[in-house]
Length: 348
Image (cartoon, rainbow, N blue to C red; front, side):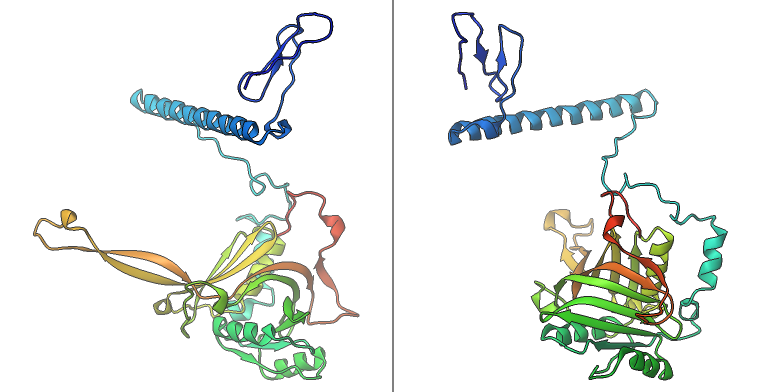
């Protein structure tokens, strides 16, 4: 792409393109950058963009070759290879937080030994979960609850009816339930989960989004009745540790590995992603050219994951001491809009 522009009365100053969409003045020493988005002609714009992209790719490949050559040279000389650069992400550049759990924090371990989840996690009490809905249920609510019943062992569903939530808490406590889950719906769509620990709390309110039921997941599997393994990822602060133990108290502490079921709560930037999988072991025969010395074809086992559903995302809104109480309840943590001062500030 070549174009020239002469200024005024023959001052001899010309602007030439360098072929990458970055023209410069030859005479006056000034430089003006022209981006592909500034070129109106579609064909020229696409050519300049493709050329810039190709040059960036070549430059990246050159850096990779130089880095590999430096590592190889260092190994031959018996020196330490140059340290690999770690890309900066929002997670590893998060703001420092005093509440991040440390392995030598004695106060944290003392709080864990005295919290409300201890009887369940120490196997003194078997988890027993009651699931109900809000007063105005929706069409997707029952389908979501039926899948929760298949995910959480020893869980039971009770119709809400016109009962007040405090009455349901009293009923569940008398029937020796350890937790109560209330599925809230809005405009025929589940939009919140209220999880209440029994008999002494706490109460956690989560915003629910991106719900995908089992029937809508491509190539989904059907779970068995075995107790699943539980995976909790990235709950690093004291608040995150408390929320993680709350989720842990919903499931039996002894998984049955024969069922090959895995339930995952993955925290990323304070969004908790829920997934439910099962292990699949596929056996494949090795090609004839790769047969063993005795001429017998060998089999190779290849593991993979099959999603069983449901799939959804949770965002913590409030964490309250004790059971549900909107008037006199004391809150441990409440999310407020003014707390979101930075993209790199996380609470879990």
